[in-house]
Image 1: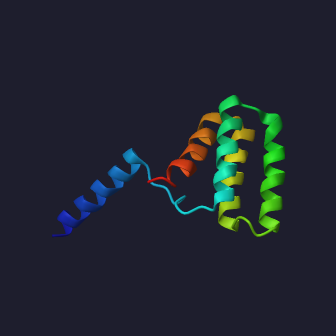
Image 2: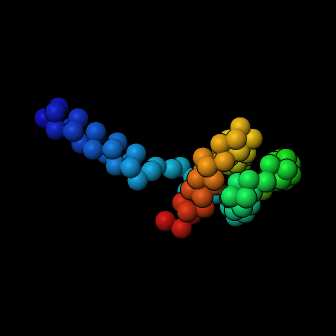
Amino acid sequence: MIRHRLLKVLACSLLCLSVGCSDYQGISPTAYQYAKALYNVTNRRRSEKLDQVSDLIAASQQEGQITEQEVEWLERIIEDARDGDWQTAQKMARQMMSDQVE
């Protein structure tokens, strides 16, 4: 019985890793627009646009248009891009967008 439960947990974990799990569901329309912008920026590797998007995100947070959690997710994408990990940043931005249509 314990072995069966352990196998179920392992199978679910492997499925999550292969398909990808995300907690991005239900983001605000504003956060979605920033994810879209960051996807574009990371796709073109436009490092000069990262500060501009970051400033817009901060302004939207101050105006109450996006949550602190959304800011953390978006800033993580920006941080990865600034570190030169464009591919991971792009995948994260894409995941934020695709999670809204599933």
